[in-house]
Structure formats: C-alpha cells, structure tokens
Image (cartoon, rainbow, N blue to C red; front, side):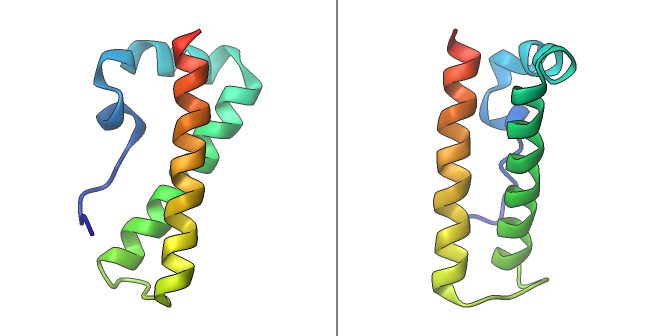
Length: 78
C-alpha cells in the first residue's frame, strides 16, 4: 500500500503537456481523467485512513483506477 497520490502527471511525467492538451480538446479523455482523479482521491483517502473502508472495497477501487490508467495510457500512446 502506497500513501503517495498517483496523479496522472506523476504517473506519466513525460506526457504532462499532452495530458493538458487532451483534457481541453478531447471530451472522452477529459471524462477518463476526471474519473481517474476521483478514484485516485478515494483510494488515497482510504489508504491514509481519512475515509477508511473495507479491504475489498479498497481493492475494487484500485482495480478500477488501474483499468482507467490503462485506458488513459492507450489514449496518450496514439
């Protein structure tokens, strides 16, 4: 378990400018990024016990975050 937030720019530092551009120009990418941000925040709050939750629920959030990260990576790799 990591207590470090996994912001998109931290995850893909070499794609920071592209992330910003796609958030502005691609509505689908913007939705993915917003959903990733929300899930990432929920995971971080659970990990730091700000908003504790059952382990299965936290694991589910992490899996959903990973799936979104994969979809975002595919968009960034085009």
